[in-house]
Amino acid sequence: RIVMLNGAFVDAADAKISIMDRGFLFADGIYEVSAVLNGRTIDNAPHLARLDRSLKEIDIPNPYSTEEWIGFQNELIARNGLTEGTVYIEVTRGVAEREFTYADDLAPTVVMFTQPKSIVASKLAETGAKVVTVPDLRWARRDIKSVALLPQVLAKQAAARAGAQEAWMVDEDGFVTEGASSSAFIVTHDGKLVTRPFTRTVLPGVTRLAITALIAETGLVLEERAFTVTEAQAAQEAFFTSASTFVAPVASLNGTPIGPGKPGPVATKLREIYIQKALAA
Ligand code: PLP
Image (cartoon, rainbow, N blue to C red):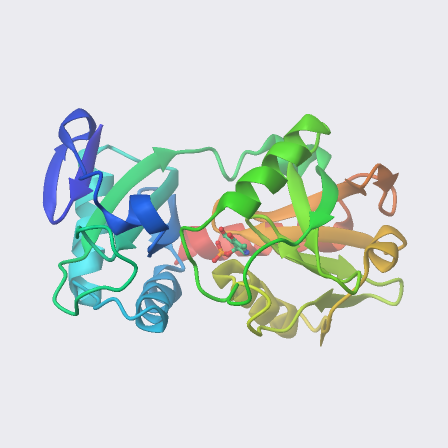
């Protein structure tokens, strides 16, 4: 496998990072993941815009222009012969003596790699995902795509142990914030789609934004507000969105079937339209 390290394409086995890298010592870095279909990135512009925003929010200079990032992504996709999957970017503040404060002139560390994954033909989309809830233990700036992912690691592992494929994180007031690696939606009995507004409490999901645009185009009604676990369990349908799953229907939440306990028509339709548009783009 060929990866990108600080602008060079090298074999994964030869890509080495210092133990003094601040990404390793402090999780002082951010990341981004774009989906790849037919060898082409999907919704890539907003992913690169969010990468730039995350960097700005934590005061790391963006080492490359948008065109340069796209060049690296395409080169990596081509070199690895990737047709369907994801392309990952991570930028850390760089290497320095271990000290909390940092110098302004550090050179960021950049790592990129691809991962093959079947996103369109997916078991999750056929059966619907089992989801369990966990307390949202993350920091107060969840809008930054930080590599400090320990709460999500614990959440996903708890989900897997419970036989579930995703964890929905719940704030102190009992409201769902989002999935451990996805944006959360419910469909009410009167056909409205409900998802949390973009504030500092959630990551501004690129796929969520694309889906809310589709909702408007298809004449469905969107309500941007928080919802509780109880409301979700009693909903008509539920689903979650991310670059690596597109639209994934939810079959059950904490063991309670949602609607008929299988993928619902709204989630299925939005998934179809999103994939069609992605393939046609
Ligand atoms: N929310 C969180 C916490 C995530 O980690 C992710 C993706 O990894 C998402 C939402 C979905 O975002 P996107 O659609 O941009 O992949």
